[in-house]
Length: 197
Image 1 (cartoon, rainbow, N blue to C red):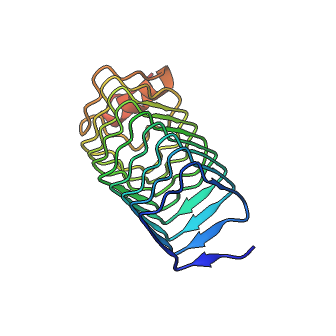
Image 2 (cartoon, rainbow, N blue to C red):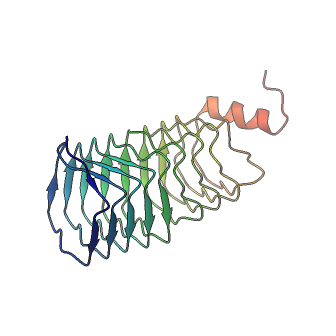
């Protein structure tokens, strides 16, 4: 499969563009590009930079965005299913109606991100940076959060059922009204020094 390297895309209209397994990008840069309603299935991006890119209403299935940088991007109503975003970093971006189902997002950086109302189900988020992230009313179910950085995260009213909360220190987050299951309750009680009998 040929790989496109060092491509610079600036201000282009990629509206509703479809990308597939034959589309592979490495160390490419996308500035102020419109990917609204774009579709990717099995496409791959490695060490790419996305700045000011609009992913509104886009759909991504089985695609890979590894070690990529997303800055000032908009993910309104964007959906990722079974995708890989290991080591990617998200800064100053918008995530209204953001949905991620399955896939591996380990080591991803969402520090300080506003993820209120986002839906993350069955996602591998090992050692992801969620420090200071706002996840109020978010759905974070069946996710692997082992080793994740969650200090100062806001989880008010979030649904956390079925997720690995072994890295969550309840003394350093605001999780008022968050929903958890009995097994998670035991994990958090143990973290607080209680002996669960």
